[in-house]
Length: 112
Image (cartoon, rainbow, N blue to C red; front, side):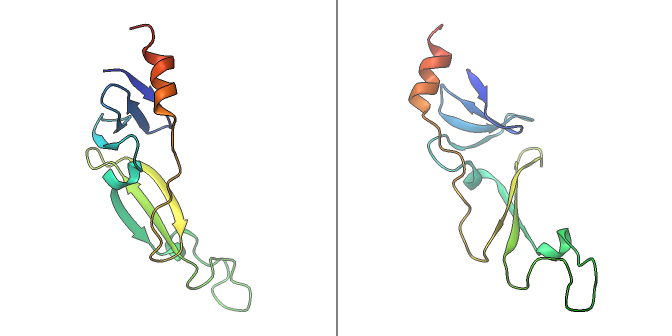
């Protein structure tokens, strides 16, 4: 197995072309797809994360009502939070990492 670390919590297995958790090695998704499809998803109200500094009055210093939801993506194997993002409600997860797998394989597997 030839793995390359992509982020703090994501690796790519170049032989199988699969995303996997860096912590436990759990297979998440095909490397040419969004790794988030293989994660456990938890949506949270932004006010849970950024509670109002001033609970009353005109200036509350928190996210605007209806702005969106925080979406957290967890490894289903070990529970490590792999990623999180603030999205408009009902919006699909962003496809934030798209790699040139052929170039990555050429670079890391040429010595084999």
